[in-house]
Image 1: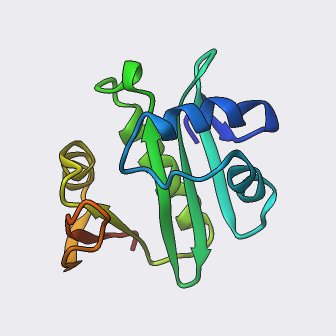
Image 2 (image 1 turned 180 degrees about the horizontal axis):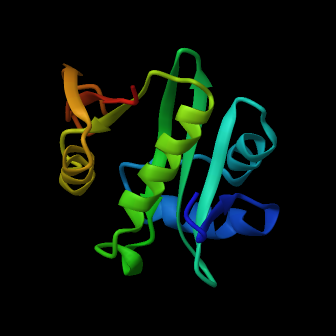
Amino acid sequence: MNSNIRPARPADLKAVCAIAQSCPSCAGWSLEQYREEMISDRGLFAVWDAGTVGGYFVLRKVHPEAQLVDLAVRPADRGQGIGSALLAAAAQAARGWDCSKITLEVSAANESALALYLRTGLLVVGSRRKFYNDGSDAILMDLPLT
């Protein structure tokens, strides 16, 4: 795993919530929901830490797959490769669980996330029309790991 990426700690939760609130397409969980994810054995909740938390991801084991539930980068840190590094760390973790792929869904309105996912090798495998509250479609994507 990238040396700046590590499992989330309780002290990270306020920063994670602030990042999530700055990103309208994030899961938008409460601090308590992120805390539950941190202590869960369902997967991995990790942060990018270079002195401050600049991003995070939540990945769940749903063997034989892994599901990327949430990934976000602090607005001030976007465009620096942190999202790509977080995605690479999620893929490394999923490979370690012997998962064949990572699955995720992303809003069609979230152009920056779509660009990241396509640039890093995810494939569009379907959609759900008008899935999100704003009426945007959910784009279903897979990252093959084998």
